[in-house]
Image (cartoon, rainbow, N blue to C red; front, side):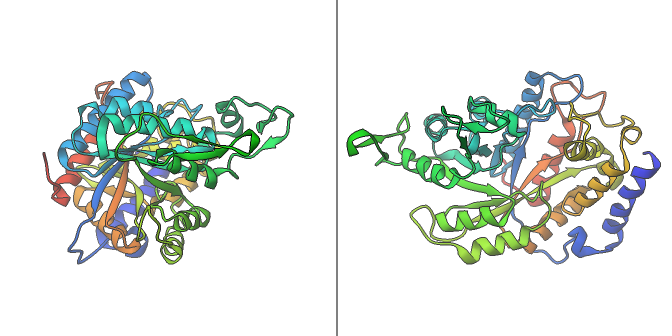
Length: 393
């Protein structure tokens, strides 16, 4: 590994090995219980790989997770990013879930400002018709892209903003709380009543109608999302894998502010974590180098492209800014041997008081790996299933 990048990795490795800074690194001791495990997938595209091949790799991942006893598999929504194939959660889940039998399938999440509530409700009603009560509908208010692309998602282009027919600005983020309520109503047996001309009301239902609606979750990385989830009585997921800061404050705010509703009587929450398992601690950090560089690209450029391969000379293209971004995020990750990562995840569960952790496997692919597979990610899932004693099918 090149010297500068290796130095940062080695500092984290030494902390894991000798127990330095256990609060920061999350090395837990004396843990007797284990959280349930779930998966988050961005369907990363690497150099030389087509979108179809990336989807094939994700299909192997979700089928492995299903067999090994993981609780959920969620896909994200991002747009106009060559490195990410996950643009349409409902479409992807319809395909990826075909080889599964018990794992919950969901969005992590649908970026609601990009979509009409009825369209989202009907997509997830259709998923429920196919997969029964295994569907989660995670909703977020971020665009998952730049403002110009977000505007284009809804057919409006006006200086990067949504506009109505008269050119007046529309802010879909401001409509987010109401759109959540609309989706829940559209999925309910009673349907949603909307005012129409003449003071009448028109009742709509999401089609197809199903016996049990998808479970709605609210996603976020701020106090706003925590408060909104609490006010609506919804389950809440904090994007710890991306934010890495403010998790405790958001979780506390959610629990303290929670209002029981028909959608939930008690607070229900978990957190997300970037994770990778290697045969050795050093190997695990080597496997995540391409992801480290991508996180730097996402924040300071250059434009995010298909993920580099493990073993590429990442150091040659990384700036000091990229390195600082990587170092600022490592503390919230779980990278190491299977035992180290399991301890880290148990520590996170204990720290935030959750009984479920959703990992995003971030190990990259090597030049000799099959083009439609990412073996290191599957190995991460297999190793953690063994460490946590998950029930195989």
